Image (cartoon, rainbow, N blue to C red; front, side):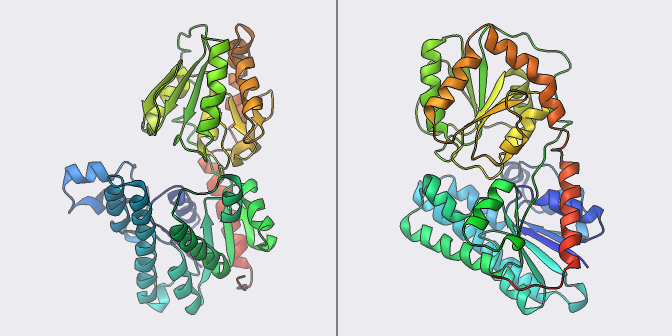
Length: 402
């Protein structure tokens, strides 16, 4: 009984593969991001460094395969107008799916997995082949259900592309024997959309507690509260709401500041704001050590891994109630939860934390409790939860998909 993991990029798929390998259940890990340095032997080093920003994964090379088409196409897409880039990104997922399906179909019968875990938008063809071969089909669903996404913030895709993506997602859900989400929040959106609750399971993600750790020596801090936003500055992440709320905060309390880690996006910096740009995980951990509070006011965040990372770093957080990792927050102890889309509630909370001396002192006093609350949100804990779910799913009779 073994499981094949396929993913056109990486996200948390390598953690699932590591969990399966540790449990003796991994049939293979096929990804768009190489997991072994050996995958890059034939790639020129300048191109390799530009394509690959991920560390190797400790998996047997014989179980890993790299399909470079998806990252190559995405590198091209980054240089194209948004509409074209979205089409190219969609094509990359579909090409990867067809590649995985063909490879699965060619596997000798005695080497076939008992189940395949494939990521949404990259699973339809793989699932169709798997079901023909009697292989279980499990959908890796890193996002909330598409109907909830449309309701909460709409889409920037063209109408035609949006319809194609919706059709693919619906077909994948219908073919999936089980759907694995990354939070109870995400699971609820699938159930609300009419998916049988017995088919949808949540396995919350984790954080690297060694990398994201409080500094050995507390850095010198000024009198003002330093807020941190880490992620894409987009509507889904509520960045427009944060800009509006922070403008009101800094007008009332000029000592407050906001550091934005991630792609620059549209718009110029405003009073009290600094755009840091994209950074690696080590640099993000350093940013967290210098900040006083992480803010993630998303309209929709299936999990929000940065929340677990911030808590691990001892950083209090302010999140919306549409962030899956809000389940880690104990209000007033390690952070606060505000209603999604409510600028007034967000502004009021940030202003209270920005007003000296009470706000900064409160945030600093909370740091030890934040670190303690992250102990159950480690990658080790995720791998244990995921392996337990896999054993449970494999023990069930082969079920019918929707």
